Amino acid sequence: MQTYIFYMKQKILIGFLLLISLFALQQPAPFFPVQEAYSSNETRLATHEMSLETRYANPAINDVFKDNILLTLSYMSGRVKTASDIHWDDVRAERQYELV
Image (tube, rainbow, N blue to C red; front, side, top):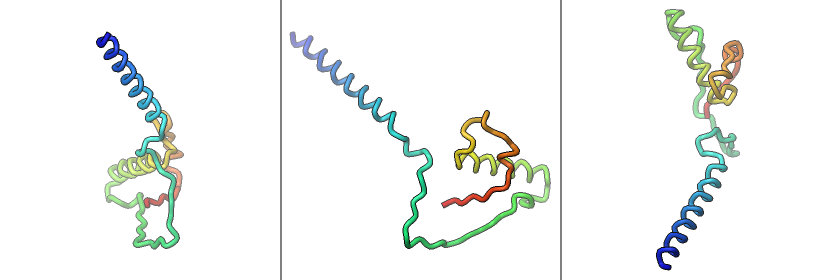
């Protein structure tokens, strides 16, 4: 009888842990992009603009780095989620990004 009770308690505990795990998986992960929140007393400390056309003197190297930077920004902004979402004309389109 005690063995039966032990196994029942064990099954209930495992079921409870599985149930908690399922609920935890349904919650948004903290690593996904978070909506921006700004305070009323926000002050810009610095700003910098950089041309991706003239970063490096060698055009071949410059193009590879430019595409890599633009693709990374597209992933970070959520416009590209998987490799099949990559449309280079869209990735290379003129845009403004802010990293806060």
